[in-house]
Length: 407
Image 1 (cartoon, rainbow, N blue to C red):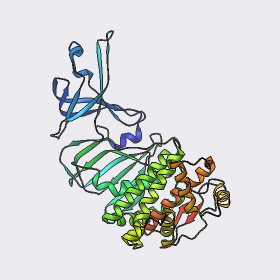
Image 2: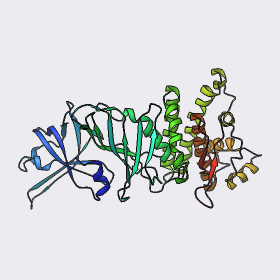
Image 3: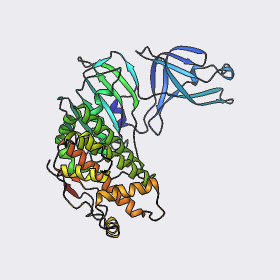
Image 4: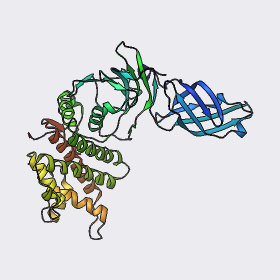
């Protein structure tokens, strides 16, 4: 299996083998096998099974496969995605992919530290970044010396277990998603026991969002030095079950909005609005102490709730400052403020209105403001006040910052 360092040095990556205690191809029980493997362009594992099957048996072989990985008692189904036969070379090709990735290769189940590869990490990581969580576990992001592969290393003294290696990493993974605006692929993890020996290895990667165009968000090189303080507050907030649930839900929709921006601006706005709904309901119920009856009051519109949540964190700036198209729309609609405009446009997209169709620039500005508000409110929830990139600014110089209100 590839070491994390090989991802830094090699492009394209070399092929490798996956050790299996048992391999089944159709009705054929191969037994123990070292399976040739490689990564495709989307960093998905491709297993080559053709060499384990006699070409004479191929016509009658049912094209299904399964594997029992090294150190595992579980039979994992494989998805056969390609099968072909070359008469000239008398060669059989059978390609299969694990039904779920990443896969775990176990020597011993418990580990006290790890080193992994982070694919397409947040941009502008130009130097090592050390982050310390509320539980005192440390995480170090180290950029590759070569940027050809587009990744970095993530190392930590976090204790993990082979039964569910990613579960203890929920806080750092959600923080990285919030930081990048979309998912990073975490994988090729080598976990070590207390003697420094490999306990288990994680082969393959978690879901990696690699949009053709990176969407500007709150994080840029100007904010890099503030990351330890931000992560400290984020990790403390994630320790509370209710806050954890609200942050995860809001960040999931926030990520979906960023990831879908190039595909559908309309869907990006709807996802951003859903993110706002998740975080606003939490703020009002858990931090602003709204009663259940007040939260359930149908006469209170979401725009009023959003305004109340923003007011709770003392957000009193002119939100439309960098949105000339929405300023004009506000004038035409009797002075609607930003909170009403966001819901107004979202509702027109969902329910349609023959009398009003938003222009492309109105949609773009509404999306920028909605995602900016998500970021501001998440910072409010975790209790961080400082500078962030102002994504509302889409004209002029990049890197314009704004100050998050003090809570």
